[in-house]
Image (cartoon, rainbow, N blue to C red):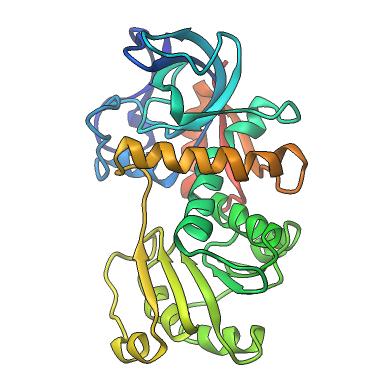
Length: 329
């Protein structure tokens, strides 16, 4: 099969399209013919040598999400039939024509979605739903602040927040990205020019002085303490990414006086049982919203598998809105 291989840690030049052996499914696994996958920041970090794949995933083939069709069932796999359209998240290996994964880490693609659209869904919506609903326990009428709001996860979070009857606000690199996010339900936003130090001022204005009930921080760095200052009593802060830095100070007085909850989250490093639970919640609560058009996949651009270097260039430009998709077959 064809696959994109990381030949050595480095820049986009280390991504090479090669012929590699096709994997075979083992117990409770299925072989999926991948039609499309989507890029994630983790792919860039893995390519650079900063984020190794889990032990049960290919070490040199990136790709954390897929849309495709079931090609073969492994021993004991009973949930799917050959030819069914499926999507989901994996530990790696999706930049390839075939991959194997546990049968319960997949969900059925709604008939209304193309493979390109479906590939833009799993990582963004499973991450956003797990953070907002399963962990932060978002309730109707609450206010939600989403950093990097025009990213794949950010736009998924905006739509899910609206679908749950809550109100989404956000930050982004520029006004153009905020305007795009408004198309998907963003109530209001702010584009910090240099520092997020005035974030609390904007949060109080948006919330009538109360502050934000939930914050999804996909940025980290200076955004972390600024977010704490922007929160309402009993607020919940979910740390999802650290693009702006892994280190930050914590205003403990604010955390104590407001009785805040701070929680870090990531999908890739979880035990398979936790990943299955997140996928099942996505299947039961988000896929019906996709099928009815209440929430939508957001595709920035689509590239052929052979153009993977250009796709990575697009991601590293920080100009994308939504997901960058690779068309595999």
